[in-house]
Image (cartoon, rainbow, N blue to C red; front, side):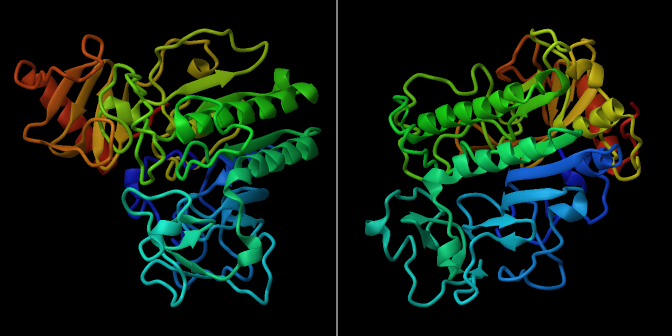
Length: 426
């Protein structure tokens, strides 16, 4: 989303630990870097999970943490280092941990526990939210996490206040930036695990913490939109709302997500969910809003988050380094609802790659997550799977045998894209 390049092009872009080094090179062209050249103030609030610090040395959580968001184009940042289920469970504002007591320094390890501290295994009976898989290392606020942490007690976040903390920071950024162009990347933690909605949303739905967290996300989005309306900015602001993967129920904690779901299908007619190359894992909700500019409706144009950089650059009248922004295509007209034409093809990535080309979908051989859950895999054998999504959105009818030429053509195209021989042209 930020770099305009498919994640598979760089090693180390899987699910990072909380002490990972930054995976975007300082100075790399990014959305905020490009918009800064057009005079925009840029900010990021929320979930970062792109690593922090230099590759050559450990992160010093008790001093200035650099490189980070500022080195890739953000003027202001208020983030968590990774995700809410990973240590360190603290906020980082503009290179420094928020509320840290120097007399109680933070130590982080993803290899071994710190002596004398509880873990999700040794102190399981005392947890306020039990784990189902993983998530049994350090215990922070009564919840098992991934990785181990010692110290920093005054800086530890409150899980049930997290969303409002991020919303307040986002609103503050908007208010301070309202008199000039600005770009805000608001990476909400909802509905990532552990799902700990604020007390005002507990019981808001009959779907347990997962449903309540979705309701909280909806409300926080509404708060940001209301801020834009209050400041008279709606007619001059493009809003893009999207997700980072398909739905997931049990993602490491026993929060009743699977038992409360009933007969509801979070991915609708699509196959599988998070972690999967099937459409349920890779086809995202994607909403654009610009009051007075975008006419409400539904578009079938094929676009990707990777296209936001080139599209925003076009909107702001900026150039960018095509050698770095290798995959981004300018589809501003599609985003604004002015054209029904989007991408000709799109690489989907979830533990492996797949190729969309119009209504056709090709999944090459290899393991592939199936069903709505992270641990159900199918092995895709040679020559791969081929589906026509117009007729079969649920990817149930493999057409590889009946359309060998199409499969061959798409397999070759995917390899050309992966090798860099075929890149963005728009």
